[in-house]
Length: 259
Image (cartoon, rainbow, N blue to C red; front, side, top):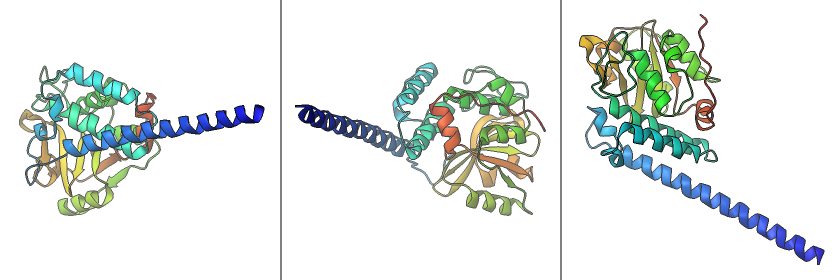
């Protein structure tokens, strides 16, 4: 009788393990499919952030989207790193950032509401990361130098420093150094933003201080801001497994403030 009971328990155990694996697999397939749909580009290159916005978010408020991201993230702790990468990209690039398009730039701008008030480059990065679910102090991060912001977000990964002899060489180095995804870029000592690599193209997403343009996306080759600098600090975000684990498990990101 004991042997029979033991056999039944073993069978039940493996059935449960199999069911759990199947549930995780179903979740991963759902997130991957959703990300593929949201990343469809209908033109040769991206001209607006609106093109990246998730279609199902078109009629939703910003707060509703933030809450949805949090709920989805809470249920995603068992997902693989690759799927977490897709989910992180979806949350930040396709759900949070598009709301901020055309929000005005100001050196001291720190609004937390898209298109209401103004936003500096550092606060644009720290606020969108926080609203995508990264556990960090948005005020403290935004007040750091570009190199310290890069170090903070890198966690255990290496920072990519780019300082070649020409703009074309800098772009080539960045393109060869990054996988597709959204990443952090710091410009020497005075500007920060995101760099997006998708379908072989590189884009800068930032709160543009030139003519106070504010939040926008532009091809890196056409960016006056990018052309104005010669030293860049780049940190992987959507392909950074340490950041992804901290993100999904709500671990606080310590802000680096030392030189």
